[in-house]
Length: 141
Image 1 (spheres, rainbow, N blue to C red):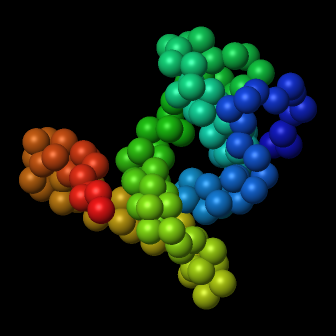
Image 2 (cartoon, rainbow, N blue to C red):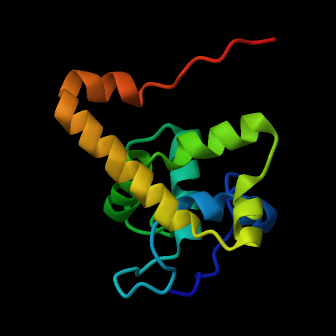
Protein backbone atom coordinates (compact mmCIF):
# COMPACT_ATOMS: atom_id res chain seq x y z
CA UNK A 1 0.00 0.00 0.00
CA UNK A 2 2.96 2.31 -0.25
CA UNK A 3 2.60 5.05 -2.77
CA UNK A 4 4.45 4.27 -5.96
CA UNK A 5 6.71 7.07 -7.07
CA UNK A 6 5.42 8.55 -10.27
CA UNK A 7 5.69 11.87 -11.99
CA UNK A 8 3.27 14.26 -10.32
CA UNK A 9 0.30 15.62 -12.22
CA UNK A 10 -0.74 19.27 -11.82
CA UNK A 11 -4.00 17.98 -10.30
CA UNK A 12 -2.29 16.10 -7.44
CA UNK A 13 -3.07 17.39 -3.96
CA UNK A 14 -0.26 18.70 -1.80
CA UNK A 15 0.45 17.14 1.60
CA UNK A 16 -1.14 20.15 3.29
CA UNK A 17 -4.32 19.84 1.20
CA UNK A 18 -4.40 16.10 1.84
CA UNK A 19 -4.18 16.61 5.61
CA UNK A 20 -7.45 18.57 5.38
CA UNK A 21 -9.20 16.29 2.88
CA UNK A 22 -8.22 12.97 4.48
CA UNK A 23 -10.43 13.55 7.52
CA UNK A 24 -13.47 13.66 5.24
CA UNK A 25 -12.57 10.84 2.88
CA UNK A 26 -11.42 8.16 5.31
CA UNK A 27 -14.51 5.97 5.68
CA UNK A 28 -12.66 3.05 7.27
CA UNK A 29 -9.33 2.44 8.93
CA UNK A 30 -6.26 3.14 6.79
CA UNK A 31 -4.89 -0.33 7.58
CA UNK A 32 -8.07 -2.19 6.56
CA UNK A 33 -7.06 -5.46 4.91
CA UNK A 34 -9.25 -4.90 1.85
CA UNK A 35 -7.54 -1.60 1.02
CA UNK A 36 -5.00 -2.20 -1.73
CA UNK A 37 -4.33 1.39 -2.83
CA UNK A 38 -3.83 4.53 -0.77
CA UNK A 39 -6.76 6.93 -0.56
CA UNK A 40 -4.37 9.72 -1.44
CA UNK A 41 -3.77 8.13 -4.86
CA UNK A 42 -7.49 7.41 -5.32
CA UNK A 43 -8.28 11.07 -4.66
CA UNK A 44 -5.49 12.21 -7.00
CA UNK A 45 -6.99 9.97 -9.70
CA UNK A 46 -10.45 11.45 -9.11
CA UNK A 47 -9.05 14.98 -9.37
CA UNK A 48 -7.33 14.04 -12.64
CA UNK A 49 -10.65 12.69 -13.95
CA UNK A 50 -12.52 15.83 -12.95
CA UNK A 51 -9.93 18.11 -14.54
CA UNK A 52 -9.45 16.09 -17.73
CA UNK A 53 -13.16 15.45 -18.23
CA UNK A 54 -12.24 12.08 -19.68
CA UNK A 55 -14.08 8.77 -19.57
CA UNK A 56 -13.26 6.56 -16.58
CA UNK A 57 -11.52 4.01 -18.80
CA UNK A 58 -9.07 6.68 -19.96
CA UNK A 59 -7.54 7.08 -16.49
CA UNK A 60 -3.74 6.83 -16.87
CA UNK A 61 -2.32 3.46 -15.87
CA UNK A 62 0.01 4.91 -13.22
CA UNK A 63 -3.08 5.58 -11.06
CA UNK A 64 -5.03 2.78 -9.39
CA UNK A 65 -7.34 0.88 -11.78
CA UNK A 66 -10.25 3.00 -13.00
CA UNK A 67 -12.85 0.52 -11.68
CA UNK A 68 -11.55 0.90 -8.14
CA UNK A 69 -11.35 4.68 -8.38
CA UNK A 70 -14.94 4.74 -9.65
CA UNK A 71 -16.16 2.46 -6.82
CA UNK A 72 -14.39 4.55 -4.18
CA UNK A 73 -15.82 7.74 -5.67
CA UNK A 74 -19.31 6.26 -5.44
CA UNK A 75 -18.70 5.41 -1.76
CA UNK A 76 -17.56 8.97 -1.07
CA UNK A 77 -20.61 10.39 -2.84
CA UNK A 78 -23.02 8.07 -1.00
CA UNK A 79 -21.49 9.01 2.35
CA UNK A 80 -21.79 12.74 1.61
CA UNK A 81 -18.06 13.34 2.05
CA UNK A 82 -17.81 16.15 -0.49
CA UNK A 83 -20.90 17.96 0.79
CA UNK A 84 -19.46 17.97 4.33
CA UNK A 85 -16.14 19.23 3.03
CA UNK A 86 -17.69 22.06 1.03
CA UNK A 87 -19.96 23.04 3.90
CA UNK A 88 -17.01 23.28 6.27
CA UNK A 89 -14.92 25.21 3.75
CA UNK A 90 -17.75 27.71 3.29
CA UNK A 91 -18.05 28.20 7.04
CA UNK A 92 -14.35 29.06 7.21
CA UNK A 93 -13.73 26.62 10.04
CA UNK A 94 -11.84 23.35 10.19
CA UNK A 95 -14.17 21.16 12.25
CA UNK A 96 -12.18 18.07 11.32
CA UNK A 97 -9.18 19.44 13.21
CA UNK A 98 -11.36 20.51 16.15
CA UNK A 99 -12.99 17.07 16.30
CA UNK A 100 -9.61 15.33 16.26
CA UNK A 101 -8.43 17.58 19.10
CA UNK A 102 -11.49 16.54 21.14
CA UNK A 103 -10.98 12.85 20.32
CA UNK A 104 -14.13 12.50 18.19
CA UNK A 105 -13.98 9.78 15.55
CA UNK A 106 -15.24 11.48 12.39
CA UNK A 107 -15.50 8.22 10.44
CA UNK A 108 -18.16 6.91 12.83
CA UNK A 109 -20.08 10.19 12.67
CA UNK A 110 -20.00 10.24 8.85
CA UNK A 111 -21.07 6.61 8.59
CA UNK A 112 -24.01 7.24 10.93
CA UNK A 113 -25.07 10.23 8.81
CA UNK A 114 -24.79 8.20 5.60
CA UNK A 115 -26.88 5.35 7.06
CA UNK A 116 -29.52 7.84 8.23
CA UNK A 117 -29.63 9.44 4.76
CA UNK A 118 -30.05 6.07 3.04
CA UNK A 119 -32.78 4.98 5.46
CA UNK A 120 -34.80 8.19 5.01
CA UNK A 121 -34.32 8.20 1.24
CA UNK A 122 -35.36 4.55 0.94
CA UNK A 123 -38.46 5.17 3.04
CA UNK A 124 -39.44 8.20 0.94
CA UNK A 125 -38.70 6.65 -2.46
CA UNK A 126 -36.34 7.48 -5.30
CA UNK A 127 -37.75 10.98 -5.97
CA UNK A 128 -36.92 12.03 -2.45
CA UNK A 129 -33.47 10.55 -2.85
CA UNK A 130 -32.87 12.77 -5.88
CA UNK A 131 -34.20 15.87 -4.09
CA UNK A 132 -32.08 15.20 -1.00
CA UNK A 133 -28.95 14.61 -3.05
CA UNK A 134 -29.12 18.02 -4.72
CA UNK A 135 -27.03 20.74 -3.07
CA UNK A 136 -28.79 23.41 -1.12
CA UNK A 137 -28.46 26.88 -2.51
CA UNK A 138 -27.11 29.41 -0.07
CA UNK A 139 -27.96 33.08 -0.43
CA UNK A 140 -25.02 35.25 -1.32
CA UNK A 141 -24.42 38.27 0.86
